[in-house]
Image: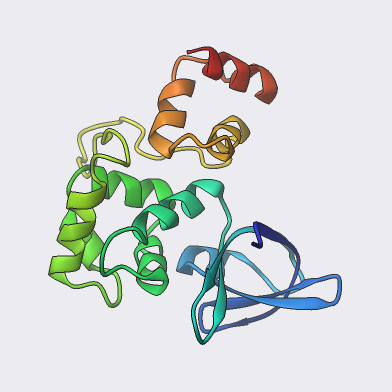
Length: 191
């Protein structure tokens, strides 16, 4: 399987990028936020999900490991295929989507193209216990941080070791953020 691609953005079209990796162009479907963030001839790295069907093989790309893990959770829900999962992730970053599911906000999930009310409710029911605890959400009178730093290398390292996003976040919550990444991971693993 193809775990990630690293190269230059050669083309952008219809929610997909062609990433030139040493002369080979990989077409990678990405969420709207990732599509808008990249520019032509920019070096990029995308974690990929290699979807194999009888008639086709497709690559779905994510700028963070957290987004890829959320995508993998979404496609386990009956009725949610890779394109619907990508549409759900296009509603916001991975933490925003995770938080909406944790808060049982099926109306938010339903805003994705091609996702109906029943599917949105199924996503919330199936995944709300798997995505972790909700943070305070959608309240203007609170200053609680609702966004997870998905560029946190320690978080991504724990997820690469098989931790879920929720478990990795919980393991790192009392670890000093000023420590080097390797030491933060070691401290989190001790818990």
